[in-house]
Structures are given as structure tokens and as C-alpha cells.
Image 1 (tube, helix red, strand yellow):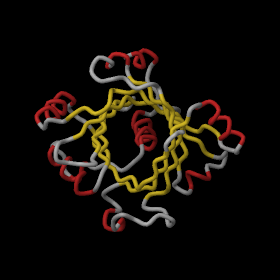
Image 2 (cartoon, helix red, strand yellow):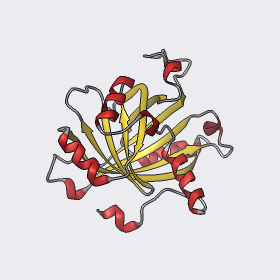
Image 3 (cartoon, one colour):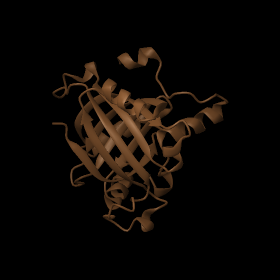
Image 4 (cartoon, one colour):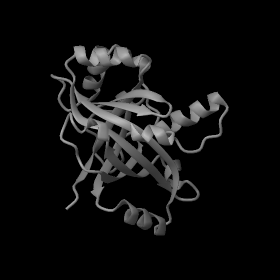
Length: 222
């Protein structure tokens, strides 16, 4: 039976300016790769009037496919699909905060997150459609997950996206701050926007009309 995960998500993003330097620093820190480089195909759903977005909520189907080139490093996992709900920034009124969220409001992105593994993404897509939702945005990335010794329950996600490379740190505020310092970042570097918001900003800077944040077809094979 598919498992369900419900918790309070606390995270930040960090833009990677020098990929080679970042890889060297991860090696110096003894970062351990805990999941394969995985291609993620994400589809966000909303009503035609964008009711979920107006409430700061999100419903997403994510399909995760481990990169074939990485199968020799760790035991490959099968392709899986995940249905996700995210609440508005800060904790939902129905969820008791694990920390004083008002203290960290501007520094971190804090949201309720509920995830469930699904066996058939296409059938779930149909259920969402008949429920009145529509696909509104698609985005892709390659993600590799690392862990640092001494920082329990902190995930370091290395994300390769069509708009550049990022780190996503998820865990407690103290663990996020410590990992960011170790990786050479300051609090002023913290990013709390979604990838969708970052993509739209990138399109505006480049004078492009926003569509979906997707790789060229050849990139998906790497």
C-alpha cells in the first residue's frame, strides 16, 4: 500500500555560481550521496481561476526516473510517481508548528507538505481533471541528494534545472544555517521562491514569454 508522508517542510534554495567549486567543497566535507541522480518531471494542477495559487496552495504529480548513467554507483530505484499537496507559506492553522514560525518567516520557506506514492500517474491525472483541476505548469530537474555527517535530518538536494544549478537545503533552521555556512553561503544568499517563480523572473530578464520550464529533448537522455 502506498506510503504517505505528512510534515512541515522547512527549506531554502541557494544558487550555484561555480559548479566545480561546489563539487570540491562537497567532497572536502565528506558529503555522502544518498540517492541517485534522478530526473524529475513535475506537473502542477489548479482550477481554471487559479484558486489554489491564490491561497498559496499547490497540488503536484511528480514522476521520478533515476538516470541510467548512474546505475553503477548505487542500487537503482524504479520509476515512481508521487502526489504532493503543499499548504500556504507558514504552517497551516490545522497543523501545530514544530517551531516558532514567525521568527523564521522571511529567512526560510515553511509549508505544510503531504505526499503519497501513487501507482498510476495517468489515472491520478484523470482523477484531478474530473475534480475540476487542470495542468497549469510543468517543470523538470535532475536531483541528487547528499547528507553531511553530524547534520541529522538535513537533506542537501543538488538540482540541475533549465535555469541553472541550485542547492536546496531542507531540515531544521539551525541545520540549514550550519550547512549553508559550511558550503560557503551567507544568509543573504537564501532563496525562498519556488522554481516556478524563479523561472518566470528568468524569462522576464531575458525578454521571453513564460511557458513550461523544460529541458531540450537531448538533455533528458544524460
